[in-house]
Length: 291
Image (cartoon, rainbow, N blue to C red; front, side):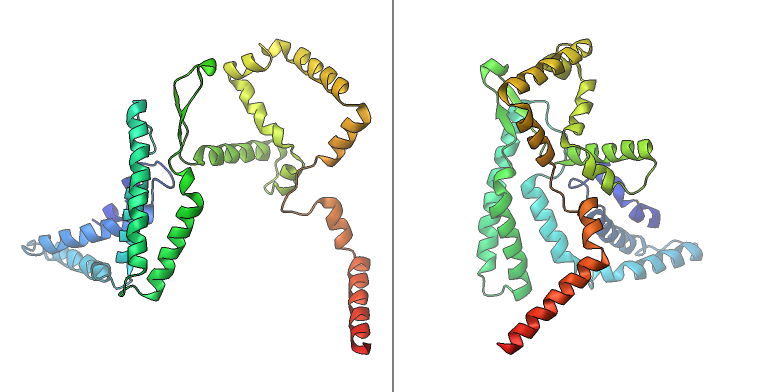
């Protein structure tokens, strides 16, 4: 029974966040195991060792059963949210009509949840902490609610028509970024890749699309014709933009990052830079006192 409780990740079938929440599964398994132990010990086993082990496990789980840590309301709120957002299975239905109906259900459920939360928000028995939690949820729904159900896209006939279903999460992008980092680590042998990715152009991620025949067909017909396609692209750029303008755009077209560039770090970390700022600050204070 202890091993079954600890095997809570199996509850989500390995589907990943946000479809799997192992800690929520752990809480539910603790409750189920506690109830099962109570039933088993109504008719205790004859073996004293087994009975002693069951008693010990029940004592360990008793705080969870009595909700001493206060997990009950949190688990209930998470369960309500997951039901409204249909966070139960990330696999999309093969039937497009059923998938569209499911997205409509999500929209309706989120609307009902929003109304219910607003009523609880202004209830006389709602505590300060609960009101703050409800405000956070309502703010997120207001900011991001429009992105929760617009995943069924009808294509125009000129693009083949039909219905396309977009993934409801960015897990695929996150997974690809992890793959990109793994490949860069193998190439460079470095563990910290901050500088590598600062100098990696954003378009480098598109290179992986060359593994797909349909992408290559649209881009240049075949891999053998890729040099010809790039040559035509360069000729067209030279016709539309003079060479100095292209070079200027290339020099100034660096992606902005949260990290400081190497050139900036070399300047701002010099003793002269620090001394100059400190001296200027002292001068400013002296002028302020005189004034």
